[in-house]
Length: 179
Image (cartoon, rainbow, N blue to C red; front, side):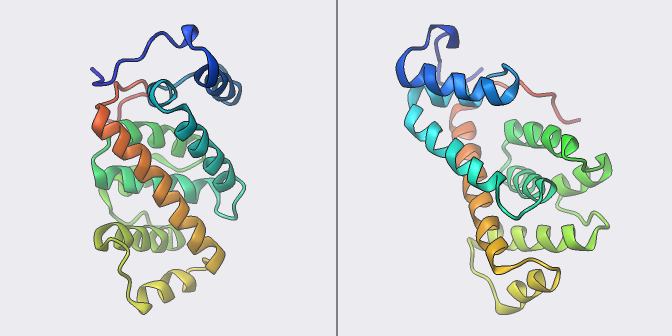
């Protein structure tokens, strides 16, 4: 059970009601528990995160790249909520089940470009961003541009925020659990 209680989203008013309407418009009516919690306690923060997610969605990173980053970071931080959410989102983005399992385990997927991205993200997460020149060169050699390096940083930052909120809250899972 979540540690932060939130009232029925239908009873929300003001900024929370506005942000809930925005989310429902983009999700076909679904309001994930993470967003219901954040909208209740910090609607401006949730709005800022959604704005940043819109920027990331319009970036030059593919949807599969974004989901690879989010799933990998979530698995590394132990956020079961985000692992479930981004396993589903990764599947919807076209990542095969075998690749999703490998990403969650921090193992190679067999896709050289995706594996270079995953190694780079793992290095950032595990070293708190301290990177040797050869690590940056390796991800560039896989075809990632300097712009994409900044976009990778944004994706890591956004998922780290939601991972942290979910870990604090122990957000009740409302996505299919990962088996």
